[in-house]
Image (cartoon, rainbow, N blue to C red):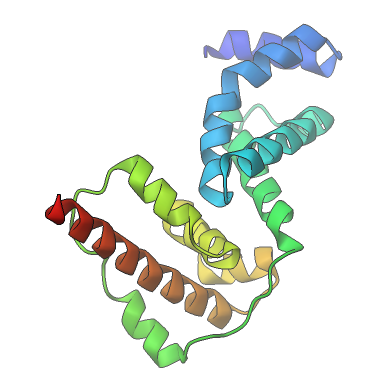
Amino acid sequence: MKDTVLDILIGGCLNGNRSDQKELYKAFYGMAFNVCLRYAGNRNDASEIVNQGFLNVFLNLKKYRRNTLFIVWLKNIMVNKAIDYYRKDLKLTLQDDLDVAEYLLSNELPENKVMYEDLLNIIQTLPTVYRIVFNLYAIEGYSHNEISVKLRISPGSSKSNLSTARRKLQSKIFELDIKRIKK
């Protein structure tokens, strides 16, 4: 979307124009849905998070600064909404010895050609806390300190949860590879 068109839509949204809100929603729904789907347990939750996120966008559009890319601002809102959506259910505990976690963090995922949809489906099977920590660290690039602040956990818990998520993902990818080989 060209900046001038985006500026016109944002201006219309700021003035409460429903058709401009609808156009902005349609223009960015796909990107927002894909971001939320990585965090959500299923498509229905992702859709609900997107809708809550866009409500937040429209309520806070006056805070958007034009020196920031709109898509980056929108993505941050969607990530934060996804975290808020699951925060109430998160029961975080330190589950692994940190030495084991550090060892596991240094290992890479097995090299294979897992399709995007397969990987997304596998990530969605992770328990909520592991899925969120994995997405924030591996996809969004947050540090463990930043994750600990966002989720109100210790950096050690973030590392442990990431370690467990990686182990679970490695196991599920391995299972998927075995199924493909047997076919």
